[in-house]
Length: 245
Image (tube, rainbow, N blue to C red; front, side, top):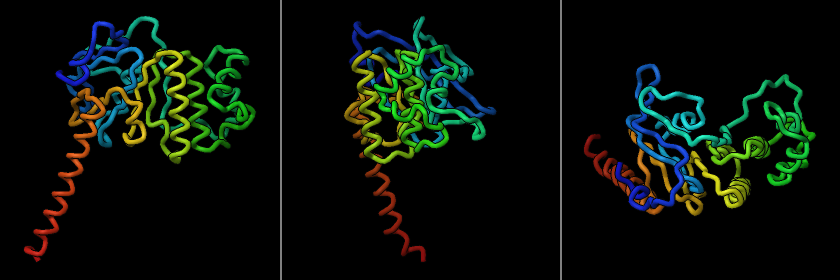
């Protein structure tokens, strides 16, 4: 696969994940086809594509929640991945405060939880019920749980869905703070490229089950051209409509 990324990749790049000829089918339907891509240390990737293109499938293959139908995924030994889903799935009858939710499934001390809570600005929420949080607060809690693994890779599946622009900006400030401190890799699924364009190093574009890596400027040009063509087709249809009345 020829892309902006591979043209500019240097021998100094540290590869953390490699996809080799990855294909994924669901009930016989091909979602991803012959994907060859690598993810390097310290790089911010934004995954873009229309609904149903396979963005979440790609992320779930990365975190090991799915296995490929064809091909091979190689992950550097010892790598920890922190995953933030779109939303929290939890039993509404389970009485759980934020502190105990963060401990759930993690062998961490209260000191470690308080340290992460301080970093992600949720310390005031630790005694609050997980069910009483706003969408923005819930996502910050999920992000905090991901950081407890001390991940070298952050896998974020539309983590700011339902947030207003102010909370979106604050959330990505937290992500960039951790990235700059640890040199971790970020793999983000987003529908709003404008919000993350300035912090994106490379765009993973999924289209028609194929995958390509593009620089942010190249991707923006493709977006602008696509929008222009859509407007052209709409205007063309309007011009032709009177002829068929």
